[in-house]
Length: 136
Image (cartoon, rainbow, N blue to C red; front, top):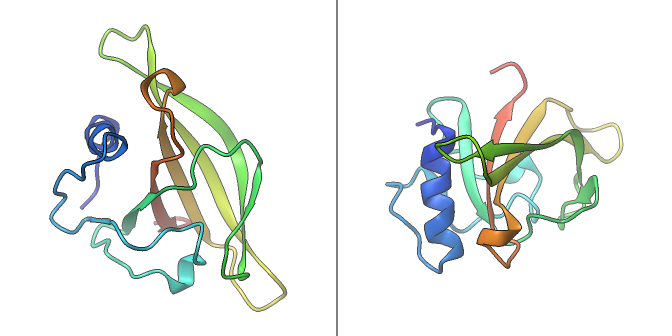
């Protein structure tokens, strides 16, 4: 299952409000992509994309190590503002990352899009991450 920006916004608003809107298993509420390298995450994406809730989003650094020590997510495209229906106010941001494994053992073919709410709409570091293999 693949979601558009408006669907992600709906899930994100509920998640930052302390609830999880049912995605029927399409968004993983347990595994955080900042805790595990992408090759260690359970895969839920029949469309080639897997979604995960995170409590570690919205950090300003462009290189974000994962807790399991397998590598880091490196920003390759800065924040893109997603605007409201009238096109005037930013309501959400997308940030694009590529996974860089430590050492020579891993592949560099994982891409992650991190979705976060505009700071006026959220006071936390909650987000939704969409991960896919590059080119899929």
